[in-house]
Amino acid sequence: MHYIEQISINGEFVTPHGTERFDLYNPATARVTGQVRLADEVDAERAIAAAKAAFPAWARTTKQERIAALRRMQAAVAARHDDLLEAVIEEYSAPASRSAWMASYPAEVIAQAITALETFEFTAVAGAARVEMTPLGVAGLITPWNSDAGFICGKLAAALAAGCTAVIKPSEMSALQTQIVTEALHAADLPPGVFNIITGRGDRVGETISRHPDVAKISFTGSTQTGKAILRNAAENFTRVTLELGGKSPTLILDDADLDQAVSLAVQAGLMNSGQACVAGTRILVPLSRQAEMEQALARAIAAVKSGDPRDSTTEVGPMVSEKQWQRVQGYIRKGQEEGARLLAGGEGRPEGTRDGWFVRPTLFTDVHNQMAIARDEIFGPVLCMIPYRDEAEAIAIANDTDYGLSALVLGGDAERARRVAQQIQSGRVLVNTLAHEPQAPFGGFKHSGVGREMGAWGIRAFMEPKSLLG
Ligand code: NAD
Image: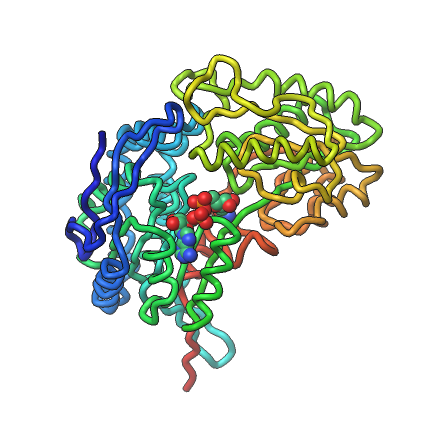
């Protein structure tokens, strides 16, 4: 059993004022594996005060000093790779390929911020004015459970690169990862107060941070619903926000697509992180003229996906993170059938060979209409919809007929045509015949998928305000 009893404020591990204990689970066994003592509003106030006190000195550091600090941070986090890997498997039951990425990404994302900072221009000339990019102040960084260590490191590296100090509120479900990252950050020897990490409930610690007049910026990753609450709270003090929210991403297969390649990429895009990924391509748009062959190929591919023990290297889909999420996914599988969609693979219940954990059957529906709940709502599980379209114009219209706009994938034989289609999709990111990631490019969503961008120079700029000096 893991007992996590301390939070980090002003460079020290301290016992929280909050006394509530929160159970930690292993989703593969549905058993309690530990407890974390949660911070409360008083702890949030203390953390904000520490970050505020540390801000003036950190804001005056040079680019070289910040790069040196980020390098220490990167090395310290990289040194904890094996511990992070074990924590990710225990806390989220991520299957092998995903957990390997989740353990190495936190150090990688710091390295990416260093690269962006090295060429970042802090001043510019605009006519007669000298424009200085100025750090905003204390940043509140709020992260979701589904890549907690990566989001803590990515947001903190960008905030520090900009000259901000930070109060971090990780997901309460990620205490193991958070503990490892916090220990690594202590080992990186950053000035006291520059970062503070307080695991607590969203409606207590998260609310305190997002309403606080001494917090100048919120960078949040999580659900659209929580994003709206944060935006409302932030309005009170004109707190700047970056919101990375949910998605219902389309995978648009054009009629000239190579079947094998399209099926392989569509399945990978849809089942990423066991379907619990903001960018998951959960709406697969297929041409009516090729619907039958694509149904057959996709059904075969989804039925062959192994869902089960995350420690088995052949597993591609692990369990859902919580019982609540398991119930939610089951509910949508039922709803899809009630709405008249045709089940091609998977269905309700647990996959064969699994027992107590929150395992689900990778599920594929066809004859889905874009107005059905399974096509509109972010399910956050391995439940995919095939939506037939008549022609390219209708495909683009369906792809854009969603509240979301985080990511999209276009698959086609003629790359030029696929790119033309990609340009007409309203989404922060559109991939053409690839699932590659570009860390220097901005990442974020249109519409209800968010506000603002992270990564690269965009990510650093999001923690700054331009100041024009004249005369
Ligand atoms: P969530 O919104 O429930 O929680 C995210 C964080 O917000 C947690 O730390 C939580 O404690 C906190 N929180 C909850 N209520 C709050 C409040 N009122 N004020 C302040 N903070 C509050 O999301 P989750 O279930 O942890 O994560 C899954 C969601 O995150 C999905 O919707 C997914 O699409 C989204 N997500 C988006 C991205 C992206 O980059 N766009 C990446 C990963 C996940």
